[in-house]
Image 1 (cartoon, rainbow, N blue to C red):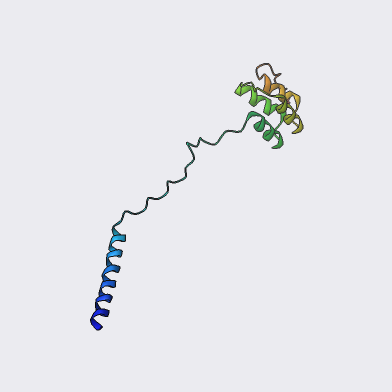
Image 2 (cartoon, one colour):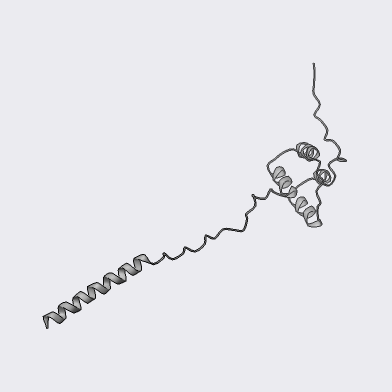
Length: 116
């Protein structure tokens, strides 16, 4: 009887070792592929509408905003919704005109310089 128990115990130990070896030698499960967005582009630059609204809300003068638009010389293709958004944000019609056609926008009046 002791021999049978000893044989069963040895068999159990041997099976445990075989299973452990077999599991240790199997190929590791492949890691799930990393979730990477498909070719993420650089952060998008704010639209001309948003840039002008941001400039107005920051307190930049009308003349400075118009000069910047003239320097960039890139007419904005403004939809009616853009015009409403600009007007609701407090952007002047002079700035909106400069956005539509920077080349023909009236140059802002320069401040008079006093000399003595």
